[in-house]
Image 1: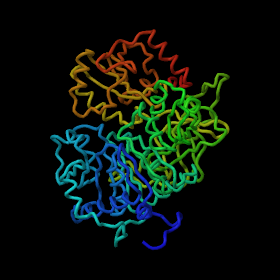
Image 2: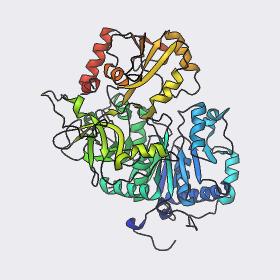
Image 3: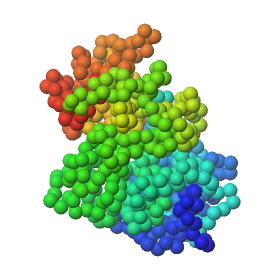
Image 4: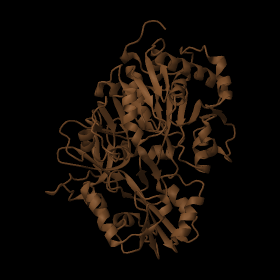
Length: 556
């Protein structure tokens, strides 16, 4: 390999993978298995050689990865980097035709999966897709001829502009969009986080968030790779397994999204909770970072980064409670009224800290400066919507105080974030529209009392709770996060003057409306079914929002 390059010279993920060749320190932990950095690089090289041989000529160099967080996931990330290919992370909570659509839309001619996910593929039409099942002898036999491959650069291989990730996000077009991230952008993001958090080669990054999401790869795996740090994998997130894993692996850093922090805080406290090696957690929507630090002695750094890379907010000392932070260096962020294009006025707060002027202060976060957004895969309409007027429109709602601190206020109309999953309302509506009693259906977000959103549906027509529950169970493409938490039953769907469903009004009223609302309380088993929301239930819910400082989100 010759002399090692400096960090500033390593401009591609492939170069970062190559740097680990010959590094015999432990570098990857998973359950009872440990691999050295060298073994990880060698495994990536073998899979890169296999991928090069498997991809048909003239096919897009895309490989779909439908895996839990097993060693095969980072090995295939490294393989794609070396081969100049792109990984499409396939979400295992998707079902039926929607799952097939994700694989085919990203033109994956190779799909890497494991036996536990094979039932998801039963009956799917995936023409031209070669499926590799990692935990089988056939897979081992397929890899064996490539055991001596080395992570050497080859002609026409990776450049900083090479596509590396195709990761799905949701938006107003309904179907998830595959955002593009190049090798150069990911390598730069990894180096930036190394500097921001002081990541060292002897650190261990704990990856418990799903690697088919951008968070785990961009904010956890990439900085570890850039610094030569190790990674410890958890197949799937477990609140009860979090602290034992951290101690067993000596983890010093982790990332989180959605309600993960809340689930950890709900585990029974122990006297030795602060006896752990963690220094930092980094993520979004923690809900109660102060309680986490008090219990575990670990500071959580809340940040915001648009999934597509077009805008970022950084926390810094002095950031007010509830705020995400200020614009990252180089970003010109503004909160814009999407209807007028004008900047929203600064937020005003009462003595109790509640937002007083949410109706005028909340708008869409926009980056008016240069940004690294690299577009969506084969979706020029979505590209144009995201970059309209030469600005980058995040699709996320924020408000800004007089000192420039930004506060997250939810998603725009057709986007929901449920338990760290981004969902599109249109997709859920299309499924619920099959319900026999529904004349019309609208799906929209209501804020979760802690973080993110919950799914609410308005159904015009007749509603039979047991029949509706049976209907939901029978839908093969209803993802695990899509079932409505609240169902509002109306005689007639409200519409605007142009005969469009009046979503803003539905969302504003939420579950506090004159119509009957059926709900499934958080924490109750799914078998408990829907029950009628009472006035006492509403009061108890509002008290939960108030206790979390999120009551103002019910008023927008």
